Structures are given as structure tokens and as C-alpha cells.
Length: 217
Image (cartoon, rainbow, N blue to C red):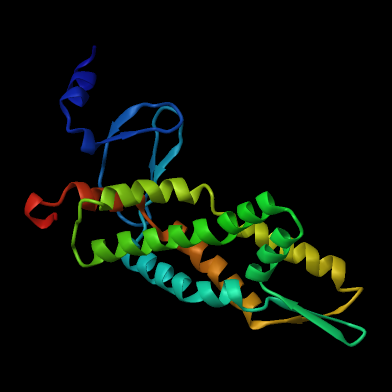
């Protein structure tokens, strides 16, 4: 065992970083915005710091929560066919799928397009809010872990692709009116994606792990 390996064993685990690709253990280094840390063995990008990550994440999550209700419940499009108009929202689509007998599909659509993304936004807002006001409740690390799990289940982008496919297929058959709900949904999608991009998880974990015990509840 080399001297460097022995030093790593003596290091606080909170100060170590493991490469997701090759599992090498490295010491964490403070990085400034504009820099990035790469694995010396495989070249994997380990960390790209984000300037004002907490503030940006908080704003994006709050904006997403404000947009959530109109994006889900307001009509997205109105189809006008021979004078007959029919509008639909995400919530109405889930209800229609359920009423047509596809209950499992309706439940999965509800979870992946609405419920899981909402939980993810709530977790993002909660974590960023407590870090912003410098409060560190015991549930904060658990919230950050749950965020990672729900991040894999939100599929609002897939629903957006479905809307685009429907527009392409129906624009020759009916006149399509784009309602306010569609723009709210697009804005919600952008805010959710931007919140994920601006959330510097390394900084979030560092703030949680390296604060004095007297600041934690």
C-alpha cells in the first residue's frame, strides 16, 4: 500500500470523492465557477461548480411550483373540427385514460407526469430554502437522497413529446388553438430542467456536512 493510499484511509470520508465510472477515491478540492474536476484515471467529469447555485435553484423551484397548478389543470389545446370544439388538460387526459379502462396506464401517467415531478420540485425547494436561510434540520440529508430517487422517475419531457406528436398528426385534421395551459406547461418544463442544472449537489452536500453542530436542528 502506497503512502497516498494510507493518507486516504486516514481522511474524513466527507472529504473524499469517488469516481462513478472507475471508483477511484480522490480528495475533494475547492473549485471556482468556470473550473471543473475530472477523474485522473478515466477522465470522467466529477464536478462542475455552479455560481449562486442555492439562489438559482430556489428561484427555479419556486417558479415551477407556482406554474404547476395551471400547467396540469388548465386546457393545453382546443381542437376545432367543423365547428365542434374540444379542449383538454393533463388532468383530463389522465381521467380519460382511466375511464377507458387503462387504469394501470393512467396511474403511471399520473405518477410520472404530475405526482413525482411535484414531489421533486417540493424537495428541491425545501432543500434550497433551508440552505438559503442557513438552517439544517435532521431531515435535510434524507430529502437530498429522496431527490435523487425521484429525479429518475419524472418524465414530463416524455409527455411533452406526446403533445408535439399529437400536434403534428392533428394539424391537418383540425384547427388547433394553443391555450394558456400549454405555455404554463412549457415554462414548468424549462424551470424544472433549469433547477436540475443549477443544483450543485456537491455544494449542497458540503454545506450540510461541514456546518457546526450548533447550527443543526
